Structure formats: structure tokens, C-alpha cells
Amino acid sequence: MAGHSKWANIKHRKGAQDAKRGKIFTKLIKEITVASKVGGPDVDTNPRLRLAIQNAKGKNMPKDTIERAVKKGQGGDSADYQELTYEGYGPNGVAVYVECQTDNQNRTVSNVRSAFSKSGGSLGKNGSLEFLFDRKGVFTIEIQEGTDLEDLELNLIDGGAEDVSDVEEGLMTITCVMEDFGNMQQKLDELKIEPKSAELERIPNITKELDDEDFVKAMKLIDKLEDDDDVQKVFHNIEAKESQFDLID
Image (cartoon, rainbow, N blue to C red; front, side):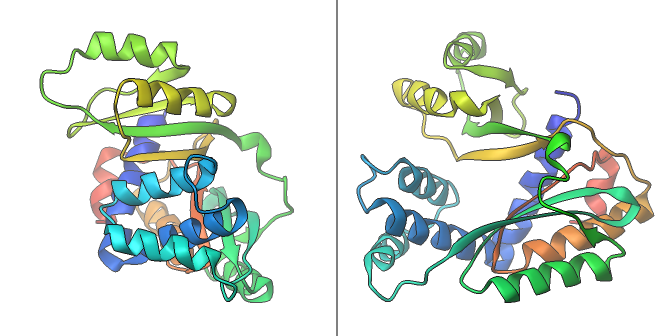
């Protein structure tokens, strides 16, 4: 999985930026509300809600905020959100895949199209980037001091892990094929490990390196999209150099 760790680092650092702006809570609350509305408020029978709450806890969302979002999904006045995806190319041919939840499709497509065009990119047809991204389960777990990493890795492989990253800043990233997502959740439950995040991600199988100037231009598009409240996730195929992370911090 060449380039995955660098891609994961960009996502991790971008996640930290979003948290400072309060954007990540907005997106998590929306996902909890939608999951509760679609599948009910019981996490034992609604795996999507369980996952959304798990991710919210991983971002230290207060318990009462989570409970309010679940109740909002059960209310008759909760918004009717559509789940939409958009695909396109940013500056210098960077592939960008956007996942949205919106109660106003016209507003969302207008905002997404504007972000692409103002960056020198353009939207493509749905499905045009499918070949560039693999759908994977991606789990981030915290490694406690004294953990037997070899034994843990063997257990994770038994649960369906196809790639386990080196521990960095106390965190380990696990990837699995989409079909093993549930198996990996069960394995982590057995190991009594609550992941800090668990997502179905679109991981690029073909990455693109940029010089510093082009990297900054591309990340401005990513930032613009992630700042939109209708946008839940943004995936791209940039493979950054370690020194380039400081350009967007």
C-alpha cells in the first residue's frame, strides 16, 4: 500500500485542523442524526449509528451532545438528508472524491462546482474516478505502553487486517478490504480495543506528487471543500513529502 501512511498523515493533520475550527463536530453530529433517523436509536441493531457514535467519542465529543444528536434523528422535524458524491480533478490533475450529506442538493452542487472551478479544476461524471480509489476499512487505535505489538498484529491479521502501520505518536492505523470491515470491528471488540476512528475510506491506488507551490494550491481546494457543512469527507490522491505538511499547518 505504497503512499498510504503519508495519505493517512494528511488526513490526521487535516482532522486536527478541522477540530480547531469546530467543523468536525458539525459533520459528526449530522452523521449521528442521519444514522439514528435511518436505522433507529439502538446501537445494538444499528451498526451505522454505533460507528458514528464511536467516531464521535474518538474526537472527544461530549456525551450529552451525542445523545441530543440521536434524539434529533428521531424527531419529526429532523432534516431529510440526501447522500451524494461528486468526483473531479483539482489543479495539476489531482483526483478529488467528495462525499456529502445535504438537505439542499442545488446548494451543495453549486458550492462544490464553485470550489473546483475557482481552483482551476473541474467536476467530472460520477464513476469517473472509481478506478483510482479502493474502498477500504480504516481503523485508528491507540497503543498502550507495554503492548505486545507482534501479538497484537497477529490478532489483527486474524480479524482481516491486510495492512498495519508502524506506531506513530501512540497511534496505529489498520486497513482491511471493505468486506472485512465488520469482522475487524468484532475482532477489536474481542480485544477490548475501542478505536479512535473507524471509517470506510477511499484510498488512492495511484498517487500524485506535487511541488510545494502546486501542493499548496491543491490543498486550498481540499480546505474549501472540507469547510462546507454539506461535505462529510474529501478524498484525494496527493502523496506529500514530509516537509510539505508544514505548509498547511
